[in-house]
Image (cartoon, rainbow, N blue to C red; front, side, top):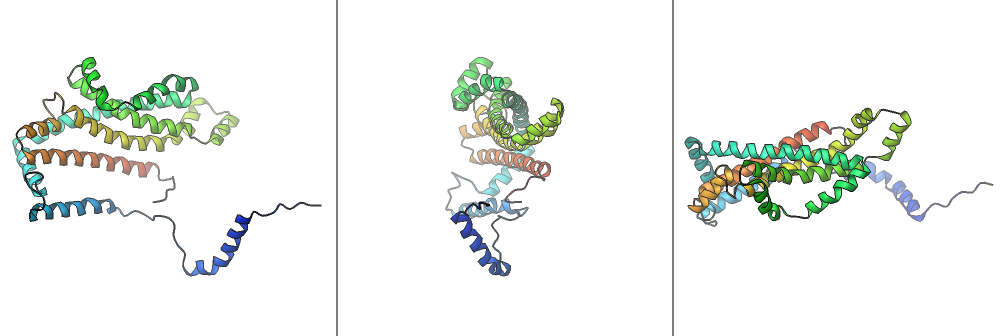
Length: 286
């Protein structure tokens, strides 16, 4: 005698609803996915903000003494470029940000590999990293000034620390969430540890690394703002700080726009690489 398991009520209701909805689905099928993104769709918000900003500055709704119009940023930028101040400070800031980002990324990847692939490494380092995660960057800034001075090395180290945490967290999580079946398959095939790292670990950790790199790039620019406001003699932050002393709102605005353009450009580049490298990964908005 064969025993037939009863069908759960929820499954039966879904099956009946599917059968009855088949004719209507043929007529009109509702799409649940977000759909493919427009290549210039992300420009909608900034363009609307720029239109509102221009209208507010032109109509007097926004006081130009508090926030000048966007055309002031263009004319002031051109003036600063002719004087040579903008490109000189921009070069210094970019060097600081990318140097700190490179060191922080390398340290984050190394620490994530140690804690993600080794149980003892996780016991040794992960707790320390989680403690650091709860300490704000502003809180450790005085100690970094005491330990490393107020020169360029201190600024790069602070940016590296700010970039380290997103890389480590995202890549560590990606390593620990690699499907166990892939590991068991590699064990059953008796692949070498090097092939295991190249064919299983690195592809599994790549999405987390690229996501962490996006957050780390933003963290590097935010940390750059902090370090260039303290005992700096060059850079975009120094230019803003100096303009604040003389109430030069137009120069302050140029500095903010430069920070925004640098951050958005970096993020767009990383997102483009992310789409190309992870084209095999299905996504809701793909």
